[in-house]
Image (cartoon, rainbow, N blue to C red; front, side):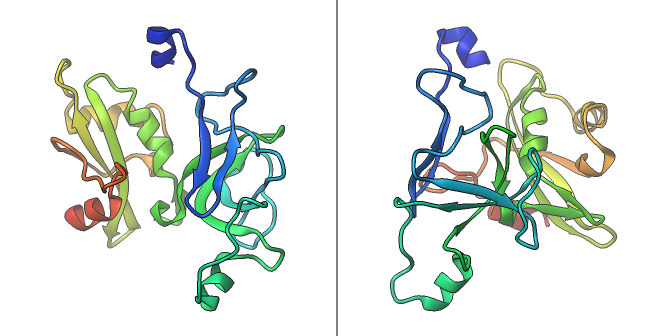
Length: 214
C-alpha cells in the first residue's frame, strides 16, 4: 500500500520456482490482491493439502503442490528424490506453505522448513513478520524458531531498525505483538542487528539465524 501511495501503481505479485517457471500471477488488468500471488496460470494446477495429503479448506494454510506442462519432469538420476518430491498423481511438492481463497487466489505463508512448532502449535513466521514490519522504527524482520526445553521451539524475532525513526525496545515490540497476535505466536526474545544474513539471491538465510540464536 505504501508503494501504491508513493508511485500510483500496484505491485504485480507472482509465484514461481526454478523447477517450474512461473506458476501463478495476479492479473495485469484486474483484481491485484496485495499479499496474494494470484490464481494459477493457464494449464497449471495448484492445490494446498494437509499433513495427510487431503485438500485444505479455503483460507487454511497447508502444503503447496503444483502440476503443469511447465513443471520439470524430475531430478536427473535421482529416483529416490523424485519419489519424495512428487506425489503419486504427479503433483510436485514445492516445499512452500500457503492457502487458497475460495476463488483460487494463492497466498504464500513461507517455507515448510521454516515452520515453527511451539508448545504443539504451528507458527508461521511470515504472519509475525508482517506485523513486525508495520511497527514504526522497524526496517525489516525475520522470525525463526530456536530450541526450547519446554516448548520444543521458541519463537524468536530478529529486527533491523530503521535509521530515521527511534527503534522500539524488545519489551515494546513484545507488548505491541501481544495486542495483535495470539500469545503462542509472540516472540520469547527479540534481537536487533544491523542487517539480516542473505544468500547470493538476496534471500534471508534463516538457518544462519537459527544457528546464531539457538
